[in-house]
Amino acid sequence: MKAAVYQRTGDPAVLEVIDRPVPEPGPGEVLVRVAVSGVNPTDWKARQGDGSGTPLRQGWQIPNQDGAGIVETVGTGVDAKLVGERVWIWEAAYKRQWGTSAEYTVVPARQVVRLGAASFDLGASLGIPFMTAHRCLTVGETMPDRLDVGALTGRTVLVQGGAGAVGNAAIQLARWADATVITTVSSSEKAQLAVAAGASYVINYREEDVVAETRKIVPDGVDAIVEVDAARNAEIDCRVIGANGSVAVYAGNSDSKVTLPVRSLMTPNVRWQFVLVYTLPTVAKAHAVFDVAAGAAAGALRVGLDAGLPLHYYPLAEAADAHAAVQNSAVGKVLVVTSDQ
Image 1 (cartoon, rainbow, N blue to C red):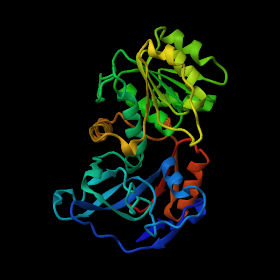
Image 2 (image 1 turned 90 degrees about the vertical axis):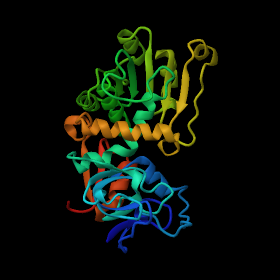
Image 3 (image 1 turned 30 degrees about the vertical axis):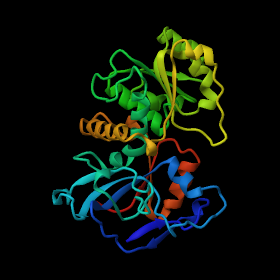
Image 4 (image 1 turned 180 degrees about the vertical axis):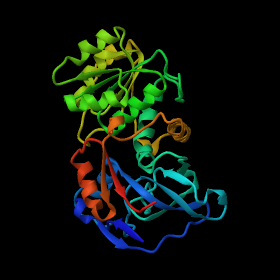
């Protein structure tokens, strides 16, 4: 099989497309013929490491956590009825060598989810972005721990950066759950994407006062904030969060720092929560997988330009270019087409 592999950390050029044997699924595992692999920021960050070009302790790594394809065969202890099923994959490469940037990958059976009639493009886009967004929307003390139709009725959510992959996922999930969604963007083009995703209100932070506009919409403050850049937005977040609200921070540079006004956040019992999908509590992760799968099955979750998430396709031979595109902040979702299905 063909696989994109790196043996040392570094820039996208360390990725090579080589031939490798098709892996055999062990006990509790499944072999998936991958159709599409999704690229996320954590994929290129893991590949780059500290930039020193350090050889990998395990020798080699196939990157990319998310993907979609068809179950080819299963290991012992796995229901054979999974064979032939269209599935989406989450966390394929977390603490494992077999990511999705290959024609085949092997993963624990619990990390494949039936996709039904939904597209492989959607399946390869669900894992990290939608599971991260799910946690951001459910971590607050006054927020539900599950998402479904009506779960967020009467609540208002602010999504900082609504044109990004997680921002888009947060808008879609929140609207599916009947929340009022306010989002911020940096351009009119990104505003159109946020509207396509389903945002109720869009604020261009380069042209408008986010605090003033948000308080016009919800004078008592928002119930939850999905935060892409706390170092830049902390002051805004503190001024628009409502009583018992939560600010969920899911991204940031390693040197980012946040300064918070303790007393003014203590009085309304505001929660600041940092979110990394890989280390979520087991129950929270299980809820995210189940609810995201339900949203996809219901047709509530979408990808593509009409969903506010433009798709950028790369063949497996150009996996390095796909990583570079995400590293250079491509707007939309970068997908690697690994095989014809």
